[in-house]
Image 1 (cartoon, rainbow, N blue to C red):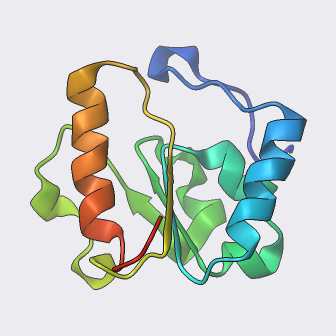
Image 2 (image 1 turned 90 degrees about the vertical axis):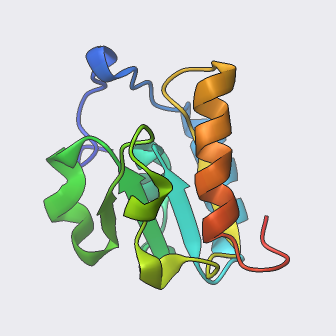
Amino acid sequence: MEELGQEDHSLAQYWYSPSTLRLLAQICKGHQRIALLSAPSVYFALDPGTRERTFLFEFDRRWEQQAGDSFRYFDYRAPISHVDDQLLGSCDLAVADPPQILQSVVDKYMQVIRVLLAPGGK
C-alpha cells in the first residue's frame, strides 16, 4: 500500500497486517455508507467502489488529498458538534482504531460512532 506511506508512531499509528486488512475490506464491501475513524490503512485497502461509499475521519492530514471528498478531519478531543452534519445518522458501518486504549478515549470514539450510525448500523 504505497499510497498509505509509513506509520507515524508519534501519532500512535500502526497499520494492520495484510490478512486483517483483507478481512476488514471484505466486511466493508457489503455496506452502503462507511465511517472509518482513525483507520487509514483500512481505507487504502478498500477497492475503489467501496472507497466511494466510505468516509475517512482522520487527524493526520497527509491523506486529505488522496482521499479527496471522503476525507474528514477528525480530532477525537474536539466537541462532537464538529462532526459533519451531513453524515449524522447515515452510516451503516463504523470501524474505529483509537490511538490509545484508554476508557476516556474509547468513550469519545463511541460518542462519535453513535451519532454517525443510522438505525440498525453496526
